[in-house]
Image (cartoon, rainbow, N blue to C red):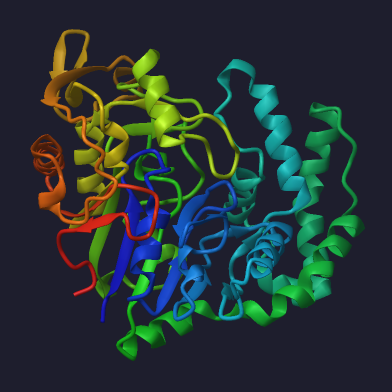
Length: 428
């Protein structure tokens, strides 16, 4: 059975965790392949809400093996706290696997992240301050610390020394901060070694053997396509590759083993942090979307910026990821609007753009060109078939499907696991 990739098609927060959890009962392995605890998934099961940050959403299904892949950067304290919190609520993490090759977030990464962001002033990126970017930078600079290094104190010390040699000069001479001691970092890391040891595995080998044995492997991205460091709205992006291509890098599964790539779209658009957002609303409609949709970050608690659905970025995400299917979430949030604007193109200095402009400058100056669809007043949260939806809601879904150039396989009409209309099987 080939692998399935699940990717956010906007700026994150699309509701990927809901779909991952929905599919979790049908898949054998659920893999988080990039990002760190700067991401968050909210999953509602039997009326209980779970906020997940590092753990894959499949952890809530007892028959699914949750895997943290090599492409993730891991804060060990955060991971162990998250495991403890879930187990305190009666959810087991005994089957969790953690890649020995995943990189670790050190305290100095968090420090550098926060002071660098403050130093940028009005040019701030809007990071979460959790050390994600600096950890990925160390990985690329080949001074990163990996999970496997926790079990060799000598190598661990050598790597921390190498990482701190430059950073301490930066902290002391540029940012007027104290130097960070090598021993305090090493000792701090070693305190987590035995607690993490039961989970550590050669996850690349495990996943490929699982595929060989006909198991279903679901690869779950964090953030969203427009936050991809290569394909997003750079520089207002994350430090990894949430797009489908990143699933291979972050898990060790070859691209020929993937035959389905599912995108998740919110029925409107949100983003957190700085950066361009053509359909952003600054009026009562934007506040209504935020309030009704509960648009506050799972990880940070920050209010999300809200706007109308943007089909231009949807088409872009389809192209970049090669989506075979889509799920549309939070359709219920749109109930009660008399009409629903949908952005079908941009105007940039009098020129129409049906696709995202090539240059950052043009995208920053893009204004939306809207088409207007009829709204509906009915509460759709109890709908369980497409025919249960009002005609206007059905038309809205079909319009999105046509505009983003990929079939819609599921529609979310509420936060619960069962509040989903399934139009086509995503596993078969």
